Figure 1 (tube, one colour):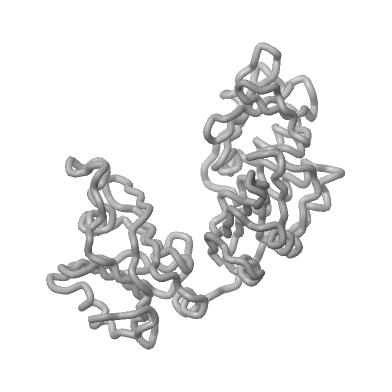
Figure 2 (cartoon, rainbow, N blue to C red):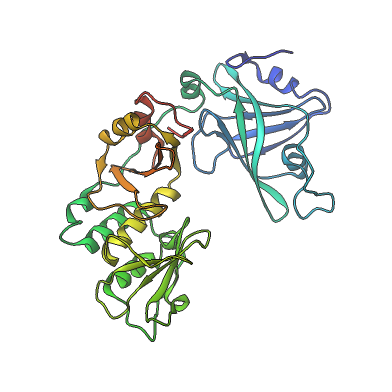
Length: 369
């Protein structure tokens, strides 16, 4: 049976795409059916962070735990299996993706397995690339748009100049929810903790992600004093450099120590650096993203005109050109690239707030709106 995207099938016809000897399993948001001819995945038109189904026009997410046969079919044997090897490939049979609507099952296309995560020997998560990419009107049918109840506001911006620590506190409390995890009190003996770091670690106590998901700030017991008296307290994600500060100052300057180079000073003292660090990490850890690595100058102007600039000198990671822009529920950064274009990364707390950025007239490499 030949099918094309947007074709409407009965559920029985969708299951027959799998061929003979069909076995199935259910996961939150989707049914997975394995047959002699193909794998068929039928999702509900739901949208959630841990719910199986269409994520964006190019990606389909499948959450488990899933039975062994599904894992073997999609991504091969798990890494702890005696049959696993670096040369293994996923099963050659196609993966047909559909969404279950009141009028029937709408065919989306073929899913190409990509990322996968195993936990306790079971496939816990798989991401599939949808081919061809879903057009906007079909995407809205199978993943209906919704509006958020509330969004983090921009009140913290008004405190940046007079009270960076108040701005940091308001930003973190608005953007990063507390968890049940308790990191305990951060004790930094034999050093006194400068007030900006004391505030930051109090905020991080029930927010482990605040310490970093891309780069990382060390808990005080992991600080290390250098021969010049500066304290190493943070690390670039690939070990490219370390962040340092002078513990004798109330709001110390922050220095970058990169092997083979002289120390470089961050543009903001610790109180401002920590806000920039929190902005970057919250953006990187946001559930919804829009990305483009080579945006031309005129498109950068269009994008930044739609957002509010954070009015400070650049942050120095990944180079001395990273500027932040915000909107309610949105953090964006632009970074100059060597070839004259600009890298853009946008993180959002809800996919709806990305949708206006999808109407700016340029294509995104990844777009979750």
